[in-house]
Image (cartoon, rainbow, N blue to C red):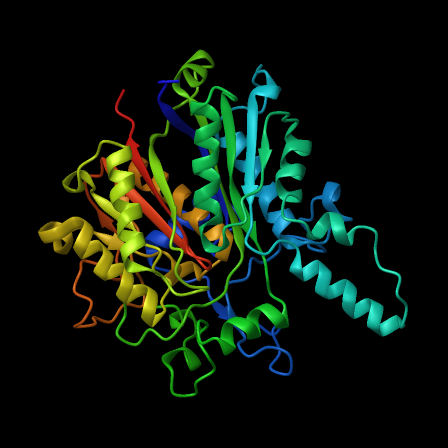
Length: 417
C-alpha cells in the first residue's frame, strides 16, 4: 500500500505524571521525576534513586479492577496508556472494523515484579503452590493481550521484546501492518516496571546504573542523578512507565474525521551482531542512515534528534560520534536532547514514551531539554541544555539502542494538510 501513515493519538504514563499533558508540562519546565524511594531499601537494592510512578498500578487507589488479579505493574501502565491514547485519538465511540486494528505492545522484561513477589510468598509459607496468575502476568505479550481485550480489538497482536528498543520496534511493526494492508489502525507502544533486586543490582554490578556515591551530586539532589551528555554522567537511573501511539492509514483517519497529529514517515531497524551489551557505532550509523534513505529524507531536513541518551559514559559518547558521522558538518547545529534526564530510563517503555514526546514536540513546536547538563568538552553538540526551546520543527528523528545489539531509528513529520 502507498497510503501515508499518520498518528492520531498519543499518551504516556511516567514518573513525571500519570497523564501525558502533566508529563509534557513538567518536561518543558525542566522538572525531574526521579527521587529517592524507601521502597528500594539498601539491604536489598544497590540503588534507591529511581523514577517510580506514584498512585498507579496494583494496590493503588487508581488500580484498574479488570487487572486486579494480574499484579504486574507493566500491564497496568500499558493498559492505562493505551486507554488514554485511544481516547486521545477520538476512537472510543467510533464505528470501525475492530478486526482491522493491530495491537503491538512490548516490554523488555515483562512481569518480573510479579514473579519476584510470588516467589517471596512461596518461600515465606514454605509451600510450592503459587498463584495461577503468575504465568499470565509474567509473559510479555499479556500487555498486548490486555490492551486488545479491554479495548475490544481483534487484529494482529504482537509483543516486541527488544530490550531498550522495544517501544520503537512496536511503532515500526505497527506501521508494517498498516502498509501491508493487514490493518487500518495500530495501537503501538510498550510498558515497563522492573524494580526487583535481581534487575536493579544486575544493572548496578555491570556498571550501567549509577552507583551509590556519597560524593556524587545526586546524594544531596536525587533529581540530578540522571544527566545525559553531562561531563559527570556516571550511569543511568532506572524508571518505569508506558508510552503509546495510535497509527492509522490516512484514508482511515480521514474517513472518520480524526485529527491527524503528525505523520509517521518510516523507520529503519538493524542488529549490531557485535556484543551482549555494548553498542556498535558502525551499525548504529547504518541504522540512522537507512532510516533517512527509507524515508527519502536528507540529513539536513532533520530539525531535532531525540536521543537515546542514557547518561552512561559509553552510550552518550558513542551516540555523539554517530551523529557527527551521520550529520557531518551540520551535526553541531542540530538540536539534540534526551528526556531521560527528567524521566530516567524505563527500558522497553522509553522509546515509546520518546515517540509520543516527538509527536507533541511537532504539535507544540518546542523541544524538551536535556536537564542536569554540565558541558563536557569531549561532547560538543547542541544538547538543548536545561531549558526547553521553542523552534520551528518539521521533521524529527528518534533513535533507540538495546542490549543484544537491536537498534531502531524512527522519523516523524509535522502534519501540514
